[in-house]
Image (cartoon, rainbow, N blue to C red; front, top):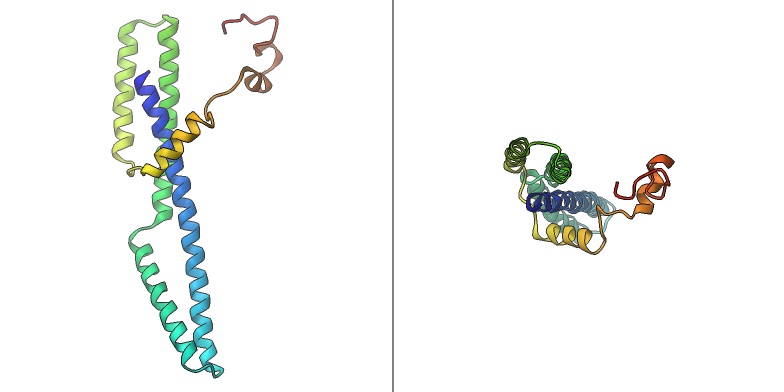
Length: 180
């Protein structure tokens, strides 16, 4: 249960990291386009007689753009966001396997040594995913915490689940046992 809880948080945190970084990446690209347009306008305005003002504006804005471009050359937010997205996908699969393991454990149908082997395999798989994943951010963890606790991500009412199922599998169905 502890491992499952940690994996749920890890999955959601990597998703939130990807969301945050994709948004930053989009804003950064927009800023680059806008700064390029302003720098170009400043230099073009010089050709039409705006004098020193156009040169100064063009020079300052192109310097800011140069700094921004140098930053993005060494730190590609889009690439890091994609790595978080991939980590979330990998952790999601392990999360689902942990849930199945917990279900098997509660059913008592599989021998304990089999369940222990499965748990150990999942831990090794999880360690492999974590070792290849970028570090998460505190802000993403707080967003994940809010999503899981307050917004109740990953939780569904019986009515919500019933809406996806055929009649014979619905909780409200008279033919289905109440403990399924």
